Image 1 (cartoon, helix red, strand yellow):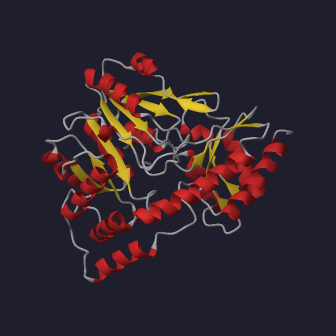
Image 2: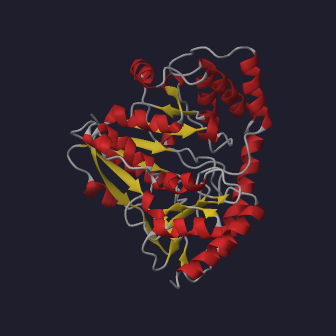
Image 3: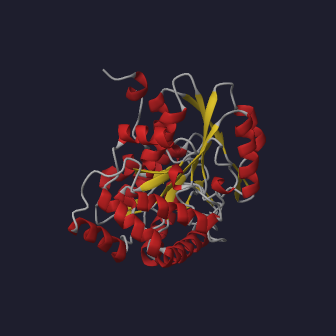
Length: 386
């Protein structure tokens, strides 16, 4: 019944671990990309108000005009670039945006490049199209991650049609510099390759207000799709609302493909998203301070441990430690969950050659994070003796 590329899909390693003990109060869950703070009250109230006025009907396929305009203005304020709201689509979650981007650009005869370590669901989004893909790993040296653009050129094939890149990066925390964005854009522009730029952690950066964006360097006509989300920026992970910016002149096509996936994002959630954009700067500032504290605690505890190699994340809210001599990240994370009641994500799920890594989310209270790290260190030391 199923196509082979669908049959071959496998559960990602994050959910494989998390679903063993999801919602278990004994577990400190650092497996997902979310903190222990809920959505701010003013955003929840906006959704309640929208429900009370019966904002529950079908809406515009590409999103409420008011929200598209608000996103356009938000991007202008951040990057000082003009983004016509006709280029903005709100299909639902950012994951849905990634899926749409892959469906728009890839087919069974095409090839894609995935910059890795990477968020595991991108593999599946590409696989569903039937396209082939190769990984290109960031280099880790002297405590830093970096992208080799010459290696990008070497891995491109005649049928390469898309390149997926995530900055700030999940799971490494790497942030791409603007000059490298320009260079990568030139490489892809010359070869008719679409850049799918996942920028959902754009505000989660520790030495600036916002991370560099391809929106700053790309022309409106360039084949660049920028994906973003409310999930991380406003603590709205469960709301499943995000957006994508596509090249100009695709308005009609975007409306058509949106109908195929979701018809429209829930209207009352879009109303709450408008409120988040209008009132959320204080929330963002507060969350960044919390994440900065979490990063410092992680680096103090794990960054100095002799059995662990850890590059300090420049953005996002993850640490991606390597345990020296580890042979199976899945076995390690299963054992950590069983013996220490701490949930982290196994490194293998973030791409090949990561099986001696694990990922943890440090968007937690200081007390909770310190307790989890104490247990992780104890388990690393005991595990290394097995």
